[in-house]
Length: 183
Image (cartoon, rainbow, N blue to C red):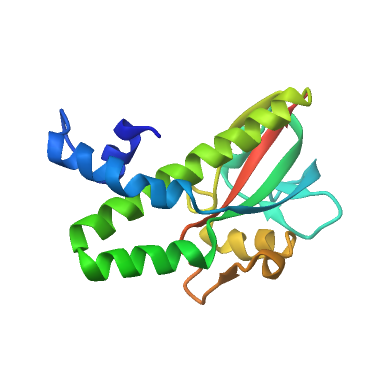
């Protein structure tokens, strides 16, 4: 658990007070105990005038962010990680009993997702891959609208993830990330 990162999700400025830290330590085991599911695929990159196309697909990563971020890469991992509907139920039921605890639990789930993505990347590094940091649609000039086509490449229904018409993932504690594999 990274209490400082959870504090950042809660918008804690400066030193965290003891009550907030105690509350985090109280609800964090709920997030920690929730199983995550993951779907990933490795794709080659084809450089085109429109952007970086994932080989074998019609999905193109457009914009300067992707071009700069993956300049040393010929391949990427596209990763979908979800904490599942259990996270939605846990947050809602906790929030109903205590809105403050519900907000803290939501922040704990956000930190847990990031930590699990970090662990995923560490496993890939152990396999010998040299990786970039991860980015997601909606960062910089990488259009949020690209998330749907990326999502479809990962068979999200097999792990219970859907995207609504506003491009939001359901369950909420889900993320699609792109990680470059350096040459």
